[in-house]
Length: 376
Figure (cartoon, rainbow, N blue to C red):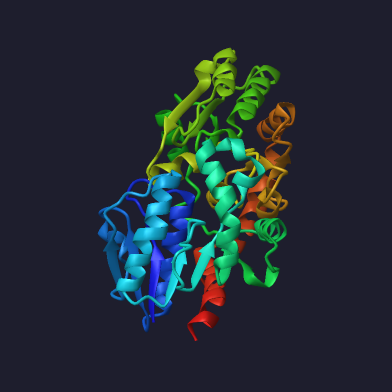
């Protein structure tokens, strides 16, 4: 069979959680199926490292598909169908929650979450309206849907009226580079990023859904409650939306000088900074999964995460769960990890066990269970 794969999000040095999901899952899936030909569809020149097997043929549509309804409409409903027809494609796999409504080619769709339905104001209005008007149609048109948690499966089924049998849960995995560091290695990382101090680490796009403002308020309370603590607060991730509410909170912080925004980090550097942290701060408002949680487990770093959406499912009992809308709860969790070595050790041990539930090999196996019946 000829199988086309939407790989427009495979961007060298700019890989998001969805990008890694597509790359890692498809790399293993392609290896399992040498009898099929896979056409990877990019929207710009690609890095050859993404072409991991001889049965992958790259195709470039020279039209960058930006996050806007105009670009999505042209790319998915005009240009992609032309490629599918030209290459005589039998099956289309799209890993970013969007498919073509103008082709009859069977499509397997990965919907990572419905955050835009729950919090439509968290993304630009035009794109919010577009996704809320189109995603139900995408879900009904797909022959099968993969999603990354039982929470998202139920959410998709209930909101769009999709039979649960049509939806398969295909969890995320973690990059093999995430691993514990030695004490000396952690010291090097702290010297590099935190002036030699311990630090709490936020990983994620700076965006209202990631709830950075309440985590900063929690950090402020933590520092006031623990005057002997010299911890920094480090935020890793690109800035998408820095709104007035976040700016006002940041400017009001007494410990503003101890907050460090360092932007996007390459994968290796990210693994280092996660492993050396006192704890990962992942008190997001809404997530379909939350990859940084299991990256921290892999790194043997304690986790503070939210008691909402999919995060309790992913973390189970291996993290401290907090109300993301309550900065005091966040501060108390930080204090507990700072003051209680036994708790830290317990969380790390439970994380070691929990991480085994989330590997890219398992992801590939689960994805294979969805796709293989369609290939017969």
